[in-house]
Length: 384
Ligand SMILES: Cc1ncc(C[n+]2csc(CCOP(=O)(O)OP(=O)(O)O)c2C)c(N)n1
Ligand SMILES: [Mg+2]
Image (cartoon, rainbow, N blue to C red; front, side):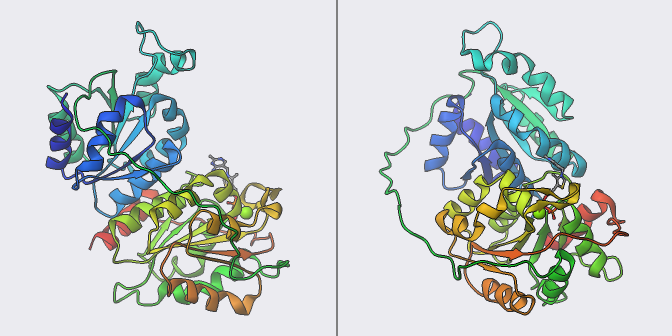
């Protein structure tokens, strides 16, 4: 299939955005996108992150596709099963088939080459072989049915296109210093910290000017919901369940789709460590409306308080080293809200690390909207 035809079908179905990790089978497409101004492509650090970014774009009303080698389907299984599946997000996944049975290939592709189609089907993706004769109709019907779908791309299916223009990047090596340094002693529990930033989450809500808030899986989302959503409907909230580590990628997708809105991701140390590559993606994209807060209790608290690697990881320094424009750490209760207000007032990406104690209420509830309810309320809010 000539790449111009493939690109034409994507655009005819409203696709202007994609994210992914390359495979040599997609070289024609990635090259083509470097010269095709109507297709915006984000280089992700993992296929799971690409799925999260594409999901954020779709949530904000922009059809989005993902490119991945079939080896990366393994990296994406969790976001597919616990993000795409539960909300039935109609992302379009293009999965190359290295190790296709009958073709000589490297040993690392053999097993995945054999199970690619079955694995995609097991993940409840509507699965097709990419063929020039049927692709346009299949893509159109997946979009009409709002169904997540995967196309398996075999060697040579996509062809033609331009050569990639030569790039000579300048690589950066620089000492970075966060807005503040030192040792920080945890004082607040997570719920108190969340309570203190609520006014900033809600400011301008009725005028459509509040930040769009994405919160990570676990007790943080449950606390945020209990504090002011259960009783007072807050449509600007997306509570992620599962897809650990994907809140930032999802927020980046929304931020890309809606440059006019501030996106605030409330994350956990364990979740950030799981997909720390997303800090690099955020820095590389330089997304001006992306603001990241990491509630750092040095623990996987939601699963019982097991220790994370965070005491030796300064997320503020890591974020700056990844290209964030501003990063600092806060532990003092009275300093938290002013610090976040300062971040929201600056161009992103910014990162605020909030040092907290472990501990949560015993009777913590769960959003009674359910995932589908959260999705419906949130997408209506952001797309209106
Ligand atoms: C891929 C995946 N692995 C493990 C889990 C189980 N899990 C749910 S929440 C959580 C801890 C998250 O830790 P952190 O982000 O630091 O948040 P905290 O609970 O400390 O607020 C874990 C391990 C999961 N949901 N998904
Ligand atoms: Mg934690």
